Length: 439
Image 1 (spheres, rainbow, N blue to C red):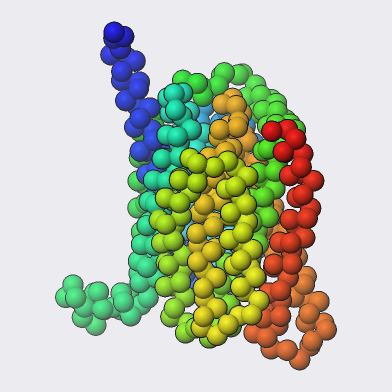
Image 2 (spheres, rainbow, N blue to C red):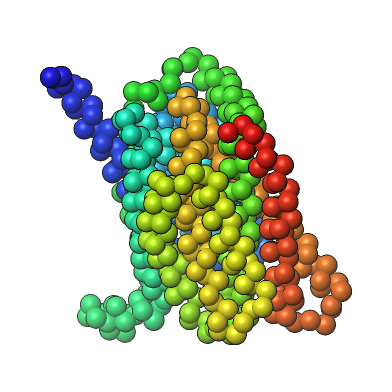
C-alpha cells in the first residue's frame, strides 16, 4: 500500500482546490453587472458616441496585442502569476471606472479603464484554464476536464443571467428610488447610475481572493529564465508552429472563427433584430437572460456528446445549429422570429465547451497557455473581420437602395450572414480533408 507523505497529500488537496477556485475565478471575473447597460451608461456619464466607439477600439486592440505574449509568459514563468495579475488589473480597472470624476478628466480615466480591462482579459485568457487543466491528475484527465467544463458552463450561465437582471435593475433610477423608499428614505433621489459598476468592483475583489488562493501545478512551473521575454518569444513561435502545423488544431480554430464571428455579429445587433420582428423594447433584457440560461441545457448535452463522439461530430452539430439560426434570421418572422435564440443559445456554449476540451487534450503542457491565447486572438480577429464585412455589405445596400429606412436596410442585410457561413464552409473543406488524412 502506497502511503502519501503529508507534503504530497497537501499538494493533492491544493490541486483539487484549484479546480473549484478556477470556476469561481472565471465566474466572478465575468460577472459584469454593467454589461446590459454599458452603452447608455457611458453616454449618461457624458461621453459622445464617437468617444464610446473609440474606447471599444482601444479595448479590443489592447487584448489583441497582449493576448499571445501573456499566454507565452504564463507558460514560461507559471500560470498563477498571470491569473493574479489579471485579478489585480480587474480591481484597478473597476476602481477607475467607479470613481472616475465627471468633466474633463472623465474620458482620459475611462480610456485608462479600457486599457486596464484589455490587459486583464489578456492575462486571464489561457492562463487560468491551463492552470486548472494541469491541476487534474493524469489518470482519466480528459473525462474529468469535461466535468469541470460542464460545471463552469452552468455556473457561468446562471451568473450571467443574474448579472443581466440585477445590473439593469440597479441602473434604473425608478427602481433605485423605490428601493430607497422601502429603506425609509422617501423622496431621496439616487445621485449616481454607477451602482452596476460598484457591484462589479465587489466581484473583482472576490476574483482576486480566488486567484491568490490558487497554487501552481508542478508540471506547469516553467523555468525561471533570466531573459523571460526572450523565452516568451520562443514560446510564441513554438505555439504558432503547433497551431499552423497540427491539422486538427488548425481546423478546430478555423471552425471556431467561422461559427463565433457570425453569431457575434448577430448578437451585436440583437436589439435591432428584436425591433425588426416587432418585439417590445422591454423584452431585450429578458431575451439576453434567456440566452444565458440556455447554457444550462448546453452544458449537459456537450458533456455527453464529447464522451461518446469525436471532434468531427461535435463541430458538425454546432455548425448545423449555427447555420439553422443564421438561416432563420432572413425571413425575420413577426414575433416568431425570436426562435433563432434557441440554436444560438445552445450551439455557442457547446462550441466553447468543445473548443476548450479538445485544445487542452491535443496541446502539450509546456505550450498550453500559449495555444489557448491563440484561440482568443483568432476568434477576436474573426469577429472584427466579420463585423467589417457586414458593415461593408450594409453600406453597399444603402448605395443601391437610398430610400430604405434603417430597419428595412437591416432586414435586407441579414441574408449575408448565412451566405458568409456557406462560403466559409467551402473554404474549410481542404483543411477538413487534410485533418482527416492526418488522423
